[in-house]
Amino acid sequence: MLLESKIAVITGGGRGIGRAIALKFAGEGATVVVAARTKTEIEWVAKEVRDAGGRAAAVAADVADEKQCEHLIHTATAEFGRVDILVNNAGEYGPVKPVEEITPVEWDRVVAVHLRGAYLLTRLVLPAMYARGFGTILNISSLSAKSAFAWGSPYAAAKAGMLGLTRVVAAEAARKGVRVNAICPGPVTETRMSKDLGHVLAERLGVSEEDQLKGFLNTILQGRGQTANEVAATALFLCSDQSSAITGQSLNVDGGAAFY
Ligand SMILES: NC(=O)c1ccc[n+]([C@@H]2O[C@H](COP(=O)([O-])OP(=O)(O)OC[C@H]3O[C@@H](n4cnc5c(N)ncnc54)[C@H](OP(=O)(O)O)[C@@H]3O)[C@@H](O)[C@H]2O)c1
Image (cartoon, rainbow, N blue to C red; front, side):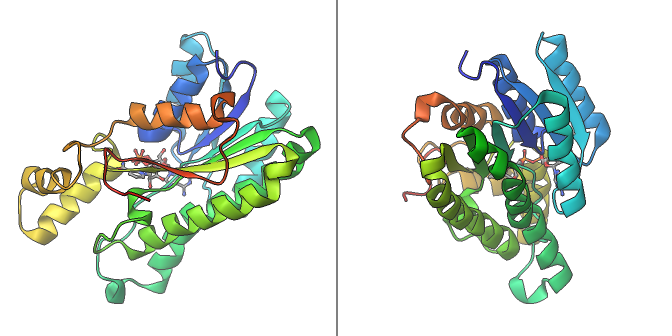
């Protein structure tokens, strides 16, 4: 088991990619603490883990809120003793429109969920990780951080910011036993975020959702989207000792779409 006796906090763990990561990590021996705003979803994922014989807890939290981030890390630590792995995965796409139509409130919200949330949780877990000389942080960024898709500027900016955060924290943490990496998934078409985005894009472009998706997937070398499970497999690699010499990196899980 690759994560035997590790304690992992996974934000956005109630569905989609976060749920897949929680189930994958639990299957490899980790105790998982899943966090998101919708209690029913995180409690269901925690139950799925427990029903399969694992250990899990669900903590309702909005990662854009400092106090709720504190509550999440405090609860995980109180219940399980420490946090070995933090996966910053919670996210929403935000407004789908040109930058000049995006309000400052909309902009701030998207940046707060992705970038500020990752920063808030990182600063909360690092001191104890440094004290133990061990820890792993994984930031779920996006192909949007490295490509140029119209009508998603706050999302792209926040995801690119997460890559900067990843590199700088990796530099600060490397000699203290903590590794920090990122994953840039391409279109994971099965998730709610992806489906909602596809719907809005098709409407804006005046094409069917099928044609919109087909056109996009055709730009990828493999000609298909990625699965949440494929992202989770890479998350497992980056959070386990299998990747012990890898830090400060962003790994593209995009079927061949970005090449840096
Ligand atoms: N799907 C893709 O194509 C794709 C591609 C690249 C990157 N990503 C990234 O992958 C991550 C997961 O997305 P997904 O596709 O799995 O979407 P999803 O199925 O919609 O899941 C998003 C998760 O994040 C949680 N969340 C959203 N806002 C939150 C907040 N403020 N505080 C706490 N939790 C919050 C959601 O739960 P609540 O709403 O209940 O809070 C949910 O559990 C996101 O960061 C996304 O940007 C996705």
